[in-house]
Amino acid sequence: MPTKNSSARVRLNAKQKLALYQHYKENPNLTQTELGTWARMKFKLSKDPSQKVISRLTREPPSESDVKARPNIKTQRSVTSTELEVSLVEWIDSCKNLNPPVVSWVTIREKAEEIRQGILSRSEGQDNTKLIALKFSNGWVQRFINRNGFKRRRVRVKEAAIVLKK
Image (cartoon, rainbow, N blue to C red; front, side):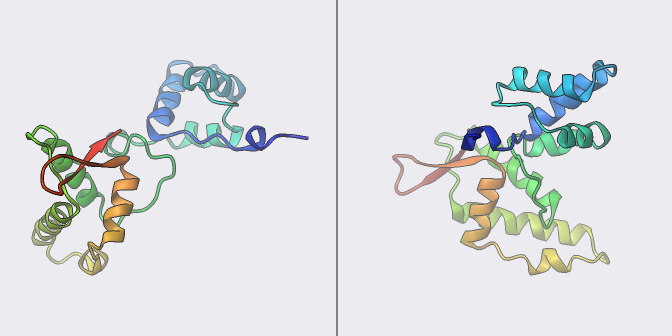
């Protein structure tokens, strides 16, 4: 009888998917089984990724911009605005260089609102109904943090929480 771990599916993150696709492009003569074995060894996986995953990757590679924006994401979840998401991630990354690198949920919401206003002002006449209706609630901030692989940390500055990448 198979154990729980042996029947669990293998999920690759965006960086791993891109690396697998690049390996496929460099070695187009490899079979999907051989690509799966390579991925298992390269990424120290419990088993080979499924043939379906490899087949899909060879036909539809992940975009490098998506991988750059969200390298550790395993499941592609849709976002209301990719531009807002990427700009906010870049802003948080730039804040890490501040001393102390303080980014709170409040500042994330404020910056998200600022970025949204910039996007809306540049894209007048386009259908931005979803972007206009977007609420930067605590739940939205939590999902944003989870989607982008950030972790919540406390620092010794008056109740300031910082968000750092893994």
